[in-house]
Length: 264
Image 1 (spheres, rainbow, N blue to C red):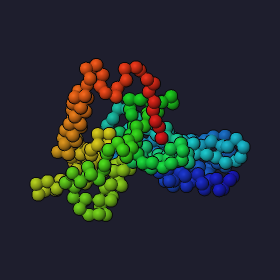
Image 2 (image 1 turned 180 degrees about the vertical axis):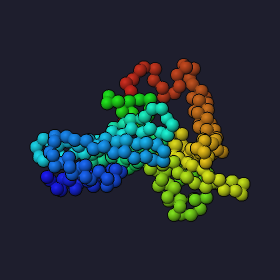
Image 3 (image 1 turned 45 degrees about the vertical axis):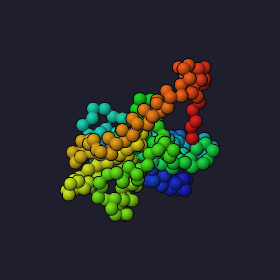
Image 4 (image 1 turned 90 degrees about the vertical axis):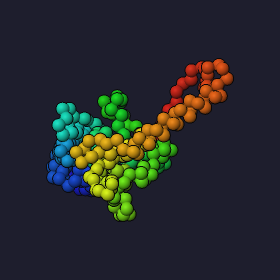
């Protein structure tokens, strides 16, 4: 058995969020030298059950194995159906188990990613449950820095007690960037209230839940909704003000053109 290959895979599995518990299974399978093999993993985040299948394949020219991907299914507590996704493992842009769980739970994850040219950029990732690719996986939406979501700015609008301490503030920000729904204390009318918050980059806000996980409509979310409405109204007013009577807004072409998408 290739011991160095085993050690590499062991560490890769561990730092992908699966811990040390799969080491024996991994060693046993490599010793048998099959062309490919799978390892099963089961855990829970809170009351949500998470089951994963890790897929390994042997090189066609050496005795080395590669951790290709893992398939994860999440069954939220009291939910009737599971959500499933395959996450691919490579040199860059890997998704850990906890990040995968958060994405399948509908939350957004902030990551430093590498584009095709090898340049690093930062973006929030969130699953689009309305679109799938050819393999049946949900597509990932990306919200880049120029999209306009400022996590720290939105946090400052909330009466979160933990933001008063730099160390606690750092923990809150780090947790939200990982896609967690984070427990905090709200200071309201002289009283402390248990709240849960999660980042919502698509709508440039932070979603707030009460102690029973019921979503709350906060002053912050209402302000953001009004800001977005105002921007839309200003855009429409600007286009109408400069309309030349042709019925076509300035800068708009009447001929159809091929849509171009820019991906990282």
